[in-house]
Image 1 (cartoon, rainbow over the protein chains, first blue to last red):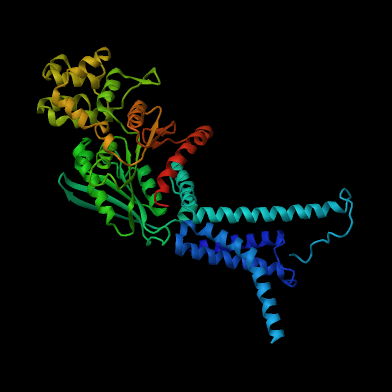
Image 2 (tube, helix red, strand yellow):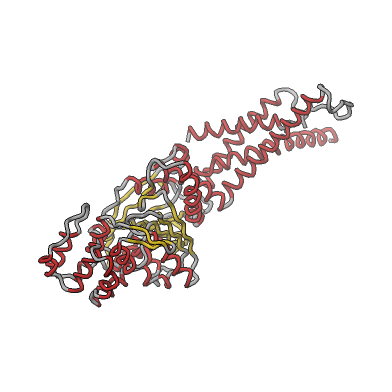
Length: 94
Length: 410
């Protein structure tokens, strides 16, 4: 499982790099944004791989890791930015 | 979303040198987006959809079959395999089961595991490397494989009664931990197809057999004897020379031994040894055979190719009845499971025409089946040193056959 986990991390890094190239990085992530996308991709791929292992078995975990990492790098940054701005608005209103 | 995206308000001549890097940048962005979309779809399809999971399994299984070794990705990502050999008792005597199963519990999706009962032909072929590789590869992919052996089969005797062993194995698997009782199929090699067909037609289990896959099997012993006797097979209306291997003759002689006298058995064993071709019986020895057995001898020996029909007619009524019993033909109308027929066109053990006859009979009674003709097998084993053309054409067909088998439990 260690080798598989490392493999998923590598896949996640590649997906993070692709997300950077696809300009999925939020405007707000100015400093260290590229690194953050790489880290997010790696983390999500690792989580996706383990989730895939638990639900589908190790044979399908790599496909699951890929799928979850891509979904994550596409959606999570927007969600984080949106929730940050929502919290900011709420705190300034109160 | 990127903060460094160029402003589209600036007026730049599209053909200018300044515009070119930006266009390349845009192209790179689009390519990355397309790659991510592809990865998302591929990952989702291969993990979440049954067809995708079957394709994943087949993609890993195919190279294992062709190269006769487990590919590294499968060893890395597959389940560890647990092996055990057990013996169960049945009405036909002991049944020897070799069980290859994943050592991990089944994942929640799709739930229970697929199980495949295998029959590896006449003789004790349990330790043949290609079979071991196949069983272990299946098990790594999460499939429970149970190979069934019987004392008769180990002695090269084909018997319809041994179908009981497969039924027993099927019923055992239905209660096996982790196995989905609706996802149990049968995969037979060579003469194992009789046992597989008899079991798949058995009223106790026939409605629950998920599939029946037959590799290099036979359909009708009488027509097989006709081909053996003539040393010619008719493929698509064309007569082609065909010569049986010694194991065929030995198995045929052994399978009818219960009807013969001890002297006749001894003479036939002498005429048709297991691993070699012996000289023909002398006229004096032939005179010791009854007319029916002499006709059977000439069919196996192939020394009267012009009198094949006459020799078939001269077989004793008991032998004719036994030959019908020993043919899958006698039970196909009772089989409910879809049948996959795989056969090599140049099979020297069981002629390809047997698979064609099987398919034609299934078509006549409107049963679901598919027939794939190959040129990569040496009877039931994949040949080595295959050309790229053969691998591409036959590999595709083999992939489709494997995929329909793997889809059952995906």
